[in-house]
Image 1 (cartoon, rainbow, N blue to C red):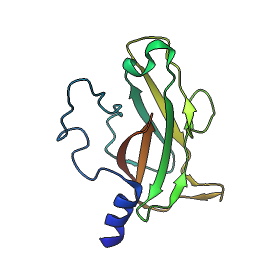
Image 2: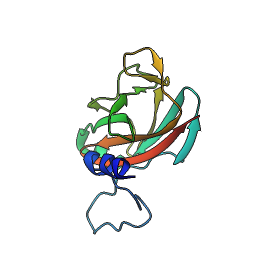
Image 3: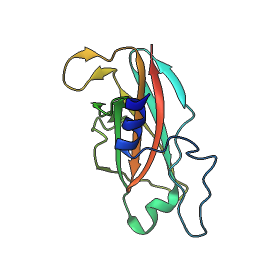
Image 4: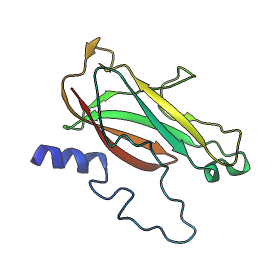
Amino acid sequence: MKRYAWAMLGLGLWVAGIEGGTRWALGQTPPPTIGPQQNRSFNPATTIPFKVSGELFLKGHRPVVSLRIYNVLAQLVAIPILRGSGKALDSLALSCPTTMGCAYSAYWDGYVGNTGQLARSGVYIYQLVIDGKRVTRKIVVK
């Protein structure tokens, strides 16, 4: 359990109450919303949907997005790609044609980095960072 706790602290992740227990002051932008797969299981590939609110695209701003998948020891496992573009979600500037916000989808093929090996069964953590704001969830590989 200590290693798991260290991984959470080392990555700067929020352990509990990501959306439910946090209140935002007037004028602060809440963190971007993520699709409903809090405890999603997959084998071997998965899609991770996420939404970015329209407020982040005002005045031509293009939010910078990164998505990384870690194991419970805080080791980087993979950087998924943005569906439809084929680009890695590593400091990628997004655009959105509407002020209502946009939905995106990241794809992970289930392989560890550039090793050619499938990820082992277990718990993994993905961290979505949009303009410096972090949102994390866990996923389970079966």
